[in-house]
Length: 145
Image (cartoon, rainbow, N blue to C red; front, side, top):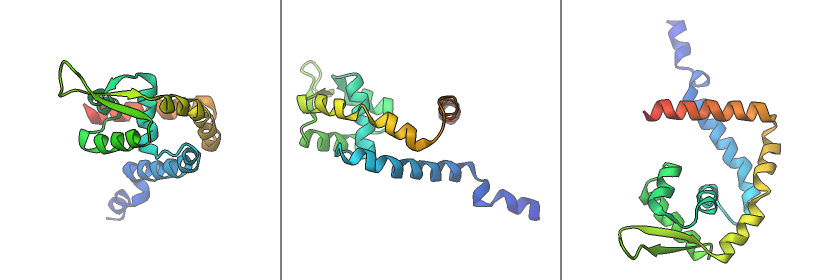
């Protein structure tokens, strides 16, 4: 019976290890993103928009694995801040496209230091970071199929 009890120890749960790591990552990003005035969900959304603007809300959701109920309020807040414009596609009004504003483009310049600052806080070398990334991507793909 004792052997089976170890299976239920929280420390032996992969989900708990990922959960606590995720929380630690958010705590690490918080001060880095304060100067930009972004939350972590806003930051990752802006990363997608900076790479591919204009972009539809649907494509952003697919890229970030977020539903429109989560994404729409987030995009509204970014629009209120003047970072993006939400525009209905003229040929299909069901499609909402996101365009960067000049202020949104300027914020990209300010955000360019964030990945390096996070990498320093992570305290892993380049190879180890790539291994962690590959393992997480593989795990996500397995769970998503």
